[in-house]
Length: 98
Image 1 (spheres, one colour):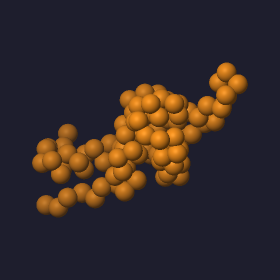
Image 2 (cartoon, one colour):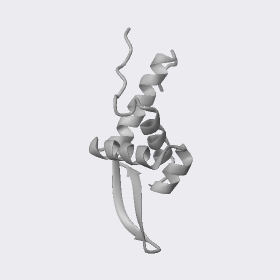
Image 3 (spheres, helix red, strand yellow):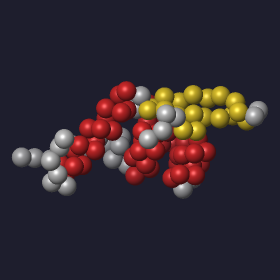
Image 4 (cartoon, one colour):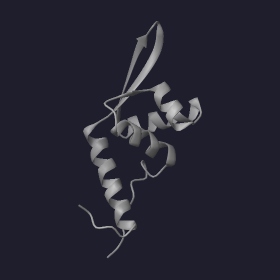
């Protein structure tokens, strides 16, 4: 029995952290992700773009108190990929799925 392949999009520490945060909330803004991950603005921005391009998150740009505000939420595709990634990791750890 072999190991399931790990999704290369999610197999990145910061992208996985962003997805983990977003899966637990309905939506999260850029500052929430920045503060929660402790990463740099540039790095969070780059990883949000990669997740968006993969179709894993939806990114909405709006204004809040006259300031631009970027809000992210997980798509159905992103949730499915995240769940598959977690299941694959459980396989690596020798746990039974389900």
